[in-house]
Length: 369
Image (cartoon, rainbow, N blue to C red; front, side, top):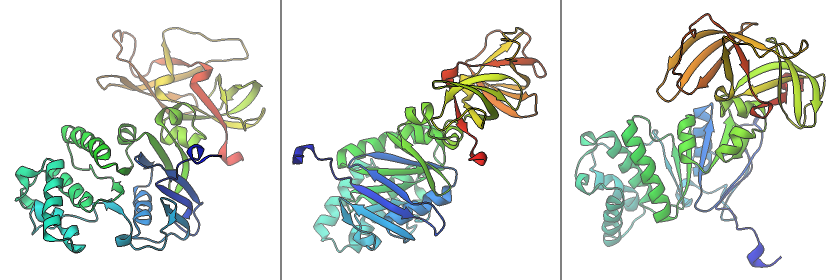
């Protein structure tokens, strides 16, 4: 294989990293210039992973490579990696300029370089007018930008953002998203963004690494995570899917016919590990379920429909959220476009639920594996 055909060396490689003695090993590559999101249900564990990459916490096993070089034993100062975290606030007694200049002073930069780089960062972040303000005088957005400026002042090749947008309103969040995208291009930064909020993960990452606790479940683009999750945990955690237990009646190629514990027979795409006459979880996203009010599309005698009772209905602008109770007491969520005709749709009404086989995925029941 010629040099031109070789795969480029990842900017960051995590090789069998273990965050705790009992956690599974983590393996992940991050390309140069990539914007990767860590998304999970345990914010403290996402913070721990950021601390491990930045060098503030040692992993219990594995290696961390930067451009192919092992930096596992390097101190934070030796790593060209910056971490922005609420655990590292601004210095209240310093101005914006002083906060941004501080890491350069700590690295013994010359006065000329310090002034030039500080001024450049202030301009990049739109903080020129606030340069001489102290922290107490800043808006939350200016605080975020100053913290980010302090980070990029010493030109790290990777920046880790540990849930940095808490406290910003919607408009400031949108501006901050745009700023991060601009900085990534202008400075050729590799950005890793940790958040427990799905909407942020969808906005920020070309790839999203989905974690349950300290376990990496899947790393892929959003469309793959939504349409081809690797297991029911990804479908529920990232896709916000309803998980309905049942038993596989029949497999026809990649389509499973399933009798649900809640009543009714449905079809779903079958996970490769699924087998006939075994327990499974049918994962169906709330926006993929069609509610049938005041009509019945019941199939054959052996295929009773899935019935539910409407518990409540809430208009949320661009969609309607419904909470439904199945016949076994299980509650599920359904989302539909705004409905113009709500005659006969009220709490307590019976609803028949349906979906196409390609809209749901059936996984082997984890407890039964």
